[in-house]
Length: 158
Ligand SMILES: [Zn+2]
Image (tube, rainbow, N blue to C red; front, side, top):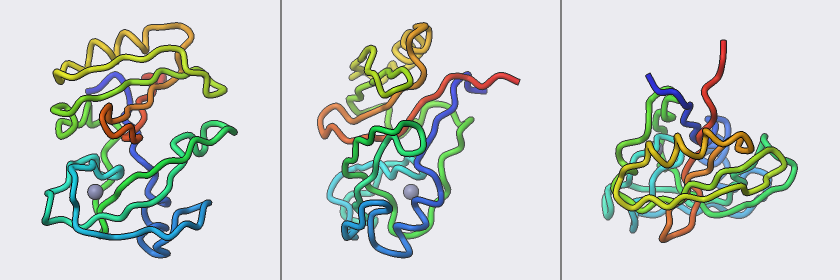
């Protein structure tokens, strides 16, 4: 049981990218290639097998469906169908070994706080940020690449 939902990109986005080979909303060509980096796949939140698995690169607004102000950036998903990460799956273990940035936002896309975790001990950072009254959700980004990985929400009641 995880106290906070882990939100990967929605399935309709992944399906549209695979079917059209374009970035939803932006229309930029989405390119597929053998993985040259660990990723992760923003759907299943697993790291890519470098030099073996194929991935698609496309432009995605990490705030889509949540805020009116966008912040598009590059993300990867597996080229072929994969299972979206379960929201109740707890922190994705594949990501723990990488340096991560936790951006804490309030509604209106206002950045309230940031935590950097490089030793895999993510729980304390997450719980500390979600304990703040002015924080509504967290974005997790790769600290070195800067790219968006996934969102963490507050536990849903009821
Ligand atoms: Zn995947």
